[in-house]
Length: 372
Image (spheres, rainbow, N blue to C red):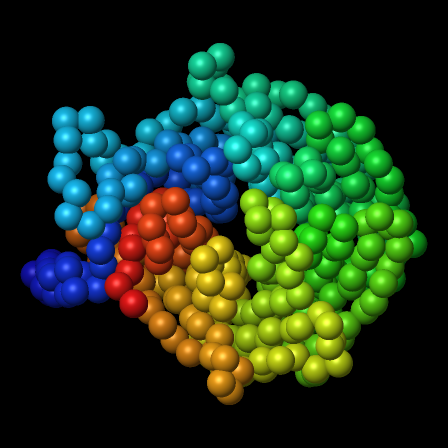
């Protein structure tokens, strides 16, 4: 116990030199995923231990996170996360996305051939209100959302073949289906927007990805990785940020064996960055979050109890470590938890540069602004 206290004390005192802000919160269930729902709140999906279902919570961020340097607390300064509304699922959650700034969350559940859209309006109810059930006939759909166009992508299996369903949320209608796609039926695929008219779909088993034109629904290109790793899972994110309505050409891919690849889609023949063993190998799901203020900064979680800030170098195209957040190894009671795995990290540009919120499988949620 004394050793644990000493470790925490050392980390805590060092944190004054490493952080402008550091706040620790917690929920009583493992956090599966986390999404911004607006500039002042987040949505989290929590596993219910020993049950199939999940708990979905919309939480208001404390205004302590928004304080600028040397700003003093007032009587109205909140320091904790506040539950605004929530709901429960009956089944295991496949994916969760929010329609940013529009008080809606979208849930895809296992074994149910539909995707549900809920309204989050605490003025009406402390329960999330079911709005639409999309009967897509797509099993275990993975989701992608562009909130500037209210477009939802549901990607999964239909009659043992992979299919993409494009849904107009505002008008509550399917616009078209992408069928006869060149996907392996035994693999898992995840969709991501590159722009409002371009979609990338990644094979999680081997990292290869396909590009689609959303104006026509046509397959454009398939890109295979330089080497295959049969024992790794791959994860991807893009620098496309709907709030800026920009088109990005860069894709970031990371495997849970520790390999990092960056592609420029204007030249897909070879990755612009290819770095092996940047992280220690694991069997976990990896989360990649791209800094909206600097698209060469990435927050990576899922390898262990840490969140890693890495940076793409302009001069030699290598990846460099910039910061390591180690706070999730400690609980709110200052106990040491060696088995914690981070599950997600979000950049909070509205709270200042280099500010993030991260979550882990022990229910810990932490807000922090690192000193670079």
